Amino acid sequence: MKIKGLSQTIAAWKLLLSSFPRGVVAFVIAVAGLSIGLPLALFVIGLPILVGMLAACEKILGVDRRMVAAWESCGEYPSGSPQIGLPDSRAELVQGGLKSWVSSLGNVQRYRNLAYGIGQFPVSILAFVLAIVIPATALALLLSPVAELISSRIFSFNLFEQDLIMKWLFPDWSSFQRSWFNTGLGVILLMATPFLFRKLGQCYAAWIRWISGTPSHT
Image (tube, rainbow, N blue to C red; front, top):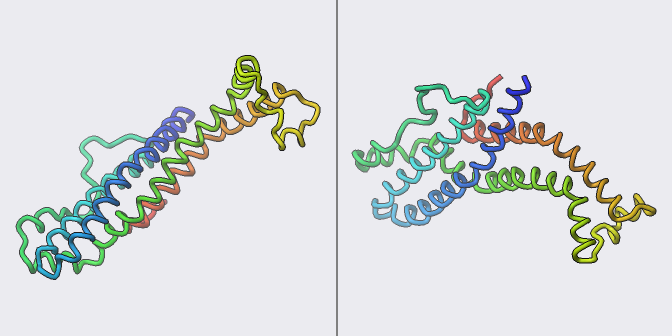
C-alpha cells in the first residue's frame, strides 16, 4: 500500500510538472490560430487554419487525458491502450473542402479544445509553481540550521535574529534555536507533501475531465 501511494505521489508530481509545457504550447497554438485564422476566415483561407488549430489543441488535450488516466491507474500505462481523445481532425484538414471545414467549425464539442488551449495556460502555471514550491519550501525549512550556521560563521549575520514572528513566538531563543523550529515545520510539510500532491493531482484531473466533457470516475 505504501508503494502504491508513493508511486501515485510521484506520478502526480510528474503530471503537475509536465502540465506547464503542454499549457504553453496549447496557448500559443490557440492564440496564433485565432489571431491568424479569424481575419483570414473572411477570405476562406482562414477556415483550415482554424480547423487545424482546433485539431492541434485536441491532440494536446488527448495527451493530458491519457496522462490523467494513467495517474488514476497508479501511474501505469496499459500496454497497447488506445489513444484517449476526440476523433482526429487531420483528415478534415487535409482532404476536406469548404463544406467539411464549416461543418467542423460548427461542432460545438470542438470548442472545448479551444477553451482548453486558453484555460490550460494559467492552470498549468499554477500546477507547475506548486509542484516546485512545495518540495523546495520543505527542503529550505529542513536546512534552516545549516543556513544559519553558514550565515553566522561566514557572513557574521544571524538569519532569524530580527525575524518579527520568531521574536514574538520565542523571544528568549537564539537565532540557531529558532532555526530548529523551522526544521520542525519542514518535517511537517515534508510529511504532508504526498497528500498535497495527490490532492493537487485530483484537482488537475477534475479540470481535465471538466474541460474535455469526460464523465467523472467513481
